[in-house]
Length: 262
Image 1 (cartoon, rainbow, N blue to C red):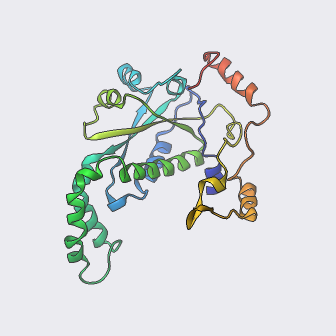
Image 2 (cartoon, one colour):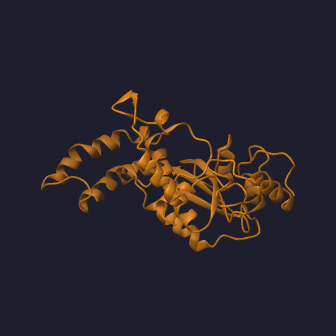
Image 3 (cartoon, rainbow, N blue to C red):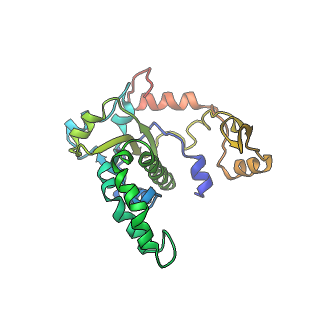
């Protein structure tokens, strides 16, 4: 699948096959993509803990987020807990030195000295502030996005979940208190169609993006839009014919509640 098609298919697939395990090598490829994602200051604070339903303890499974009906968490053979290791900010200076040493940051014969005079003191002084939600969470989002695209390329489905009580989850999986869980991602083989019933509703392009000024929408070229539609990145809007019947068949197959949200 080409990248544009993968982006177009990057929608939440909530109905996963609980009886089909996910190969470890596929999960590794997703995590490799996350590791290589952009990280400001090369801090590598974006981390993940993979939960295999077949081998996790009952207590651990009970502590996974389940905000409403919870069938997504209950059905998924794998759940990835994406989290921030805030202690990574304490090593910011060393990570910057590594970038300079390999030629990825700065230039000229005095670049090492310049680094020690400017960026290292700045990052060291601001380490505690950098541990708070902000840039590190944006980095985690990029890591998740890259992992998601790889997973879709490998034929997997996934959906991100939140929780009002990550502390309970953190303790169940023995994560240090320096770790901040941001999301749980269900992972498995979809039992619904790959198009997920069609492209989910989105606000108009012109409402979301601007050029030079807030009151100036970014110009949307119809030719570019048509090209993306042809490539599969922009897909047919939901609902597609037969979606209700498909969901009902899945519900009956797995004995899910007759009415539910998640």
